[in-house]
Length: 277
Image (spheres, rainbow, N blue to C red):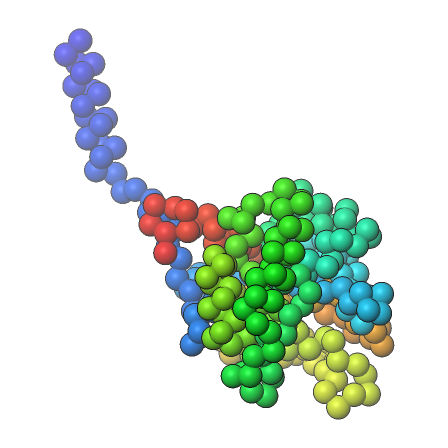
């Protein structure tokens, strides 16, 4: 009996002295308004984010969520999770009901991008507000209704990307007061320019977008990068000229370079851990 107790005491002592794996901490790089654009940049992790809006006025000709199924199929094939931010309008279109359910069922992060794709402020003058506080709150209430219709609670979708990835202090203060945490694509990459049309002065081809992508990685690394790719079919571009159709190659190349892929689910899990932020 004494020998048994002695063994137990020795085992307990060894356990108490053994090094314990620490809970992860969350360190983010932010802009001057506190919006996150890199997540744990000390880690070799990439955060793939996919935004979309459906322009009801032209039945989705210019803006739509038509890239969602190809994106989901590629992510499934590659065994990678992503974070999706369609506007609330997308949630009411019949053809997107099943893909949105797939996002949830296949373990991806789902939040939104406002309901009606609000433009908060002028591009040339961010001090000029284009919406009121009441209009932001009303729009976000509609957005929340759609997310919750799919069974999500606010704690599950509280990290969101501002519409147009464009905002000012006024808009940030309102969204923060509503309980949201804001993340924006990492600056310096051109993947968000796939809305431009061939022949236009601001057109950037997918070939150039991908060249820029790999140049950025070579010069800066992709550690903690929030990489935006639209899950949308903008008009006048061929399938080859849509960045999301190159997602598989992007994932393969990043894996070869030793990167892992995480989502905002992982960020929320860290926030809930003992050490947290």
